[in-house]
Length: 81
Image (cartoon, rainbow, N blue to C red; front, side, top):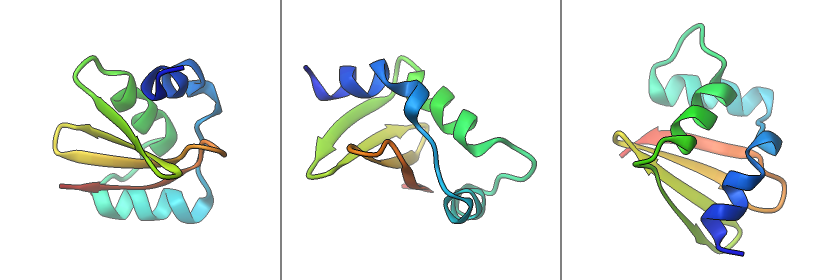
């Protein structure tokens, strides 16, 4: 299965930790936002470029890179390019 299709087919499994939420909020300057839903929405956008390198997926869109562990579907971080 193509890597990006695998991620998109399992988008409902994408999650993060409390520390991950804080890190993503800080890195992207977000406040009262559900960061998991924010990241999922970005990943599902048609212009999102998804590639897998090693154990992680990297999703690039709108100047943001979202890093997701490909085994656990955990959002590790998101930051501005």
